[in-house]
Image (cartoon, rainbow, N blue to C red; front, side):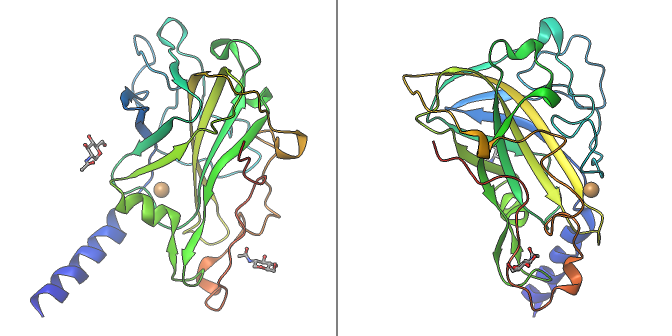
Length: 244
Ligand SMILES: *[C@@H]1O[C@H](CO)[C@@H](O)[C@H](O)[C@H]1NC(C)=O
Ligand SMILES: *[C@@H]1O[C@H](CO)[C@@H](O)[C@H](O)[C@H]1NC(C)=O
Ligand SMILES: [Cu+2]
């Protein structure tokens, strides 16, 4: 009795505090990297992450900042990149309790040169990881974002081991769909220098632009989850995952 009351209270507290957010830090190949500090001036910040300014979502799938959030700018002399071998594990850590309904997606983009001078909206992105509806119905099932919260607000992905070395962007994204027919996109980008002896590159069908990859006509983007009580599939937007 006491336990069930306590759990109900906890569940209520959780649903109330689930909120906006972003990726605050990374653990890549065993090393920790601090993210950009949103709500602060970029002046003097040093990070592998590109600038993003608030925990607020992007709500339009054609928003010009969809690639790396608003404003996605390079940190100039403070802009760093993490040098890691292909095949490394990358864990992204969000703020505690981002939203719990919707998919988690991870993308990369080859900068074809220096990422520090690259414009995120001009790059061609490929998806390396995705998870959507884990179990149950669209209306009240378990989502990847709920799993992320249960994993200490983190998500771990392996960079394809065969990926050709070079400078790349890494883009983590939550697509929160708890508000009917009003998607919320939460993307953050970091810069990587991939090392190794791989030679694989995704072919054209795996490559997308942001904006461009998503639209309000995608079933997974423009959705009222609460009306889908007897639907047990969810179509994650964007291209197929490239396995390397
Ligand atoms: C949970 O995540 C934080 C980073 O947000 C990290 O410092 C801490 O070690 C993690 N705790 C566990 C138990 O992994
Ligand atoms: C579920 O699958 C059907 C048939 O493929 C599709 O039309 C529908 O859009 C899917 N539902 C969701 C929520 O993705
Ligand atoms: Cu929110």
